[in-house]
Image (cartoon, rainbow, N blue to C red; front, side, top):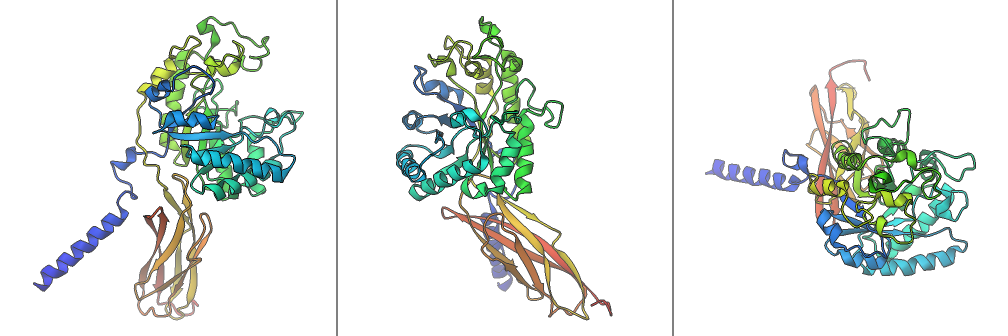
Length: 453
């Protein structure tokens, strides 16, 4: 009878452990889920029905007016908040607060703060300045979070470019570096980037002869990690330009609206293949990537754009309103379900130590950091060392911020026998009342060795 009760209690304990970790540990079924979201840009002031977006099967839509968001209830909406560069900062703060209240009342889940701030035409012709943009980002972020803390704030997607002699365009890697050195990481939930493919396939090497390729975002990510930033990267704009000649338009570099873009043109078939392959590549290789937004759905239908304006030829609809090959390819593209939940990644050093039983002592085992590489959220972290009676395990700090190093100490004063002693530290995060748990492991090796203190 005692054995039966013991086994029942043991079974209940194991069931509780499995339940606690269910949904957070990898499994064969969960390998097919993804952090990647499928999104598209939808321009305002056209006669294109929102049904085209619905039929495409996206789960995200990027819009340019607050009013547009109401056409996409049931979808996740990213809104681009164009800020301009403020002359009066208090006036700017008040304007942001007014717009944030309208955003908070709308079915909008995320806000992108300005667009391609490393290009001069996004600042009214003035030279881009990363330090000044960080100030814009700081005011916008703190104001928005005060009004609606749950809104996800994305930094303005950087344009992939190289620095020009007049510095009217700044290399995206240099611009990002200066942003990070000026504290930008405190003022975004996700980092925005525009990994256009130009005229090369999505798999093209970012260290090749042409550095401006879809995978250039990998270099951005490496830079973020160098600065200890492990937040998601959102691909808030990307695509390939379809050759206008396929629709009977002979656009060239002689046309001011197409100058500098002719070399990027690919066939409609290539555009379709490259877009689908881009999603697949990101899914398989970029655990740190968030939603991806195809540029664009309906710029062909914006009547004030000239026929050869390059923005038209990224569209998924033709000038006559019919879908392109790319539209149908994306419509058929394999989908990966996403639960849009935070996802913890623990990064640690060896977390191992050796000592002699002749001189047991308190020692530092190592450090680890906790990062959220899943859906952006403000997580409350608690670090819980497991003490088994042989080693006293301590951590500092017990309630760290994301990315803050946590030191692990062990007190080995009570060890009597040689051997390898495991050390376990549980990491607990709470988001909206839901618990996410993971653990990190190390060990201490004790020896009978005289004179080795």
